[in-house]
Amino acid sequence: MTTYKELQAQIEQLRKQAEELRQAEIADVITEIKTKMQEYGITGADLGLMGKKRIMKTSPAMEAETPAPAHTDAPASSEM
Image (tube, rainbow, N blue to C red):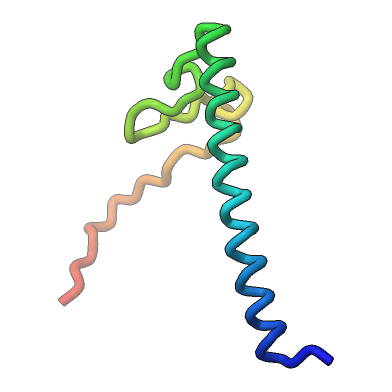
Protein backbone atom coordinates (compact mmCIF):
# COMPACT_ATOMS: atom_id res chain seq x y z
CA MET A 1 0.00 0.00 0.00
CA THR A 2 1.26 3.45 -0.94
CA THR A 3 1.49 6.03 1.81
CA TYR A 4 0.32 9.60 1.65
CA LYS A 5 3.91 10.82 1.80
CA GLU A 6 4.90 8.61 -1.15
CA LEU A 7 1.96 9.88 -3.20
CA GLN A 8 2.94 13.48 -2.43
CA ALA A 9 6.49 12.74 -3.63
CA GLN A 10 5.10 11.19 -6.83
CA ILE A 11 2.87 14.23 -7.37
CA GLU A 12 5.84 16.56 -6.98
CA GLN A 13 7.89 14.49 -9.43
CA LEU A 14 5.03 14.53 -11.95
CA ARG A 15 4.70 18.30 -11.57
CA LYS A 16 8.40 18.71 -12.34
CA GLN A 17 8.13 16.43 -15.37
CA ALA A 18 5.04 18.27 -16.60
CA GLU A 19 6.78 21.65 -16.29
CA GLU A 20 9.84 20.37 -18.16
CA LEU A 21 7.62 19.07 -20.97
CA ARG A 22 5.67 22.33 -21.02
CA GLN A 23 8.86 24.36 -21.40
CA ALA A 24 10.07 22.08 -24.22
CA GLU A 25 6.72 22.39 -26.01
CA ILE A 26 6.73 26.16 -25.60
CA ALA A 27 10.19 26.33 -27.17
CA ASP A 28 8.95 24.24 -30.12
CA VAL A 29 5.86 26.42 -30.57
CA ILE A 30 7.91 29.62 -30.47
CA THR A 31 10.26 28.23 -33.11
CA GLU A 32 7.28 27.25 -35.28
CA ILE A 33 5.68 30.67 -34.90
CA LYS A 34 8.92 32.47 -35.76
CA THR A 35 9.36 30.27 -38.83
CA LYS A 36 5.82 31.02 -40.04
CA MET A 37 6.22 34.73 -39.37
CA GLN A 38 9.42 34.81 -41.39
CA GLU A 39 7.89 32.68 -44.17
CA TYR A 40 4.88 34.97 -44.55
CA GLY A 41 6.55 38.27 -43.64
CA ILE A 42 4.40 38.75 -40.55
CA THR A 43 5.63 41.23 -37.94
CA GLY A 44 4.78 41.76 -34.30
CA ALA A 45 2.96 44.91 -35.36
CA ASP A 46 0.78 42.82 -37.69
CA LEU A 47 -0.26 40.82 -34.65
CA GLY A 48 -0.85 43.88 -32.48
CA LEU A 49 2.12 43.06 -30.27
CA MET A 50 4.07 46.29 -30.59
CA GLY A 51 3.91 49.21 -28.21
CA LYS A 52 2.61 49.52 -24.69
CA LYS A 53 -0.84 50.77 -25.58
CA ARG A 54 -3.18 48.82 -27.74
CA ILE A 55 -5.76 50.88 -29.54
CA MET A 56 -8.92 48.96 -30.22
CA LYS A 57 -10.33 49.80 -33.59
CA THR A 58 -14.08 50.17 -33.44
CA SER A 59 -16.45 49.48 -36.23
CA PRO A 60 -19.04 52.12 -37.22
CA ALA A 61 -21.70 49.95 -35.58
CA MET A 62 -19.82 50.00 -32.27
CA GLU A 63 -19.35 53.76 -32.42
CA ALA A 64 -23.10 54.27 -32.91
CA GLU A 65 -23.86 52.17 -29.83
CA THR A 66 -21.52 54.11 -27.55
CA PRO A 67 -23.54 56.60 -25.49
CA ALA A 68 -22.32 60.18 -25.32
CA PRO A 69 -20.84 61.16 -21.96
CA ALA A 70 -23.25 62.95 -19.66
CA HIS A 71 -22.42 66.60 -19.11
CA THR A 72 -23.46 68.25 -15.90
CA ASP A 73 -23.16 71.85 -14.86
CA ALA A 74 -22.64 70.91 -11.21
CA PRO A 75 -19.17 71.66 -9.84
CA ALA A 76 -16.98 68.72 -9.02
CA SER A 77 -17.05 67.87 -5.33
CA SER A 78 -13.80 67.69 -3.45
CA GLU A 79 -13.20 65.16 -0.74
CA MET A 80 -11.42 66.25 2.43
